[in-house]
Image 1 (spheres, rainbow, N blue to C red):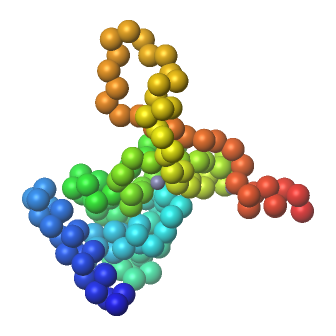
Image 2 (image 1 turned 90 degrees about the vertical axis):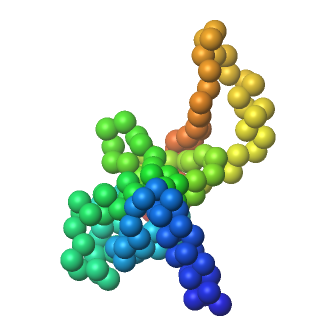
Length: 149
Ligand SMILES: [Zn+2]
Ligand SMILES: [Zn+2]
């Protein structure tokens, strides 16, 4: 059952890459698989360390290239944070994030009536929205518990 699902996912990834004229490679598939397994929105460094165990020849530069290819074909999305390292998300639908300012963990926040939220902001005249995101910043439960000890 699990294998069937994996085959389907791999097929879908191959199609997306094909559509952008990008190649499906074992390394790309490994990066994609890792992103599918985690929900903490890892950085390229974290992904590199994780996939290296199975693919010892992979380099950090290749991981970056593979991530760009995945983002470019719509199989993943990239979250940028000013000067901090970008993070990668297997989800490409419109959703939001919470970020712990201590451990940096990024978690998904499901939008509830996000159209209503947009109605609450006062935009400059003539500004047209192309995309938007909401980030909630604070301290996660785990970090709170560590502080209490
Ligand atoms: Zn935390
Ligand atoms: Zn996300």
